[in-house]
Length: 266
Image (cartoon, rainbow, N blue to C red):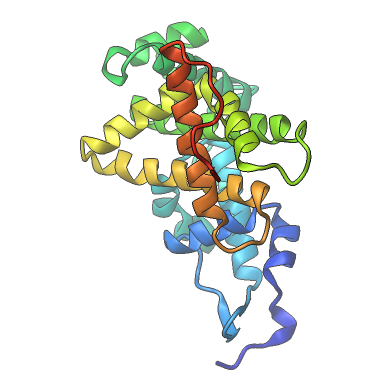
């Protein structure tokens, strides 16, 4: 393949330019949101401006409009063809002076509501009441209750990752698997009901939730693996074991057994 090196750069530079972790870039490529990288050798790939443009648009759609990856896949080609005009694709109402604040408020209420009640027990009216917004305002920011739910679940994952990094930083480095599982248990506990609800809906074979559950849990183990064993092969499998041990610890705590980590690395 004839690749113009002047227009191409490494994954390290791509993450530098966009602020998007390598694990997330790979996930987006697998989902077809980004074009494949140019392979120049068995283990070396190069990226280009088209990857930067797409990643910046995806990042803005996730942060500003809180779109799901499924929705982004639908609108991304049109936005890129229009020169990356994110706000022109789905512009918030002019009477919303702080759309991100309203979005975050709704998501925070959603995390609390879906953590206390099942998906079916929470209505759009409940979310509006909790966030103190009108239904018209709600629908300027979200298409449906389902969209709020999947974005709340991803927010839980990102909050859990932030808590995990904070907890793990208190341990001697590199942290052993027992310490990592304990830190993960602390990190996951506040949002675990929402993640379990997402897993339940995926196990009911509802297509949207299957895809979103895969994205959420892959994001969790990919980024946790990068924290635990940066750059090592197999770090995703290690993170998966840590997550399973952490969930075991949380449930053990519910039945009164305050013992240590279950089996990660033992």
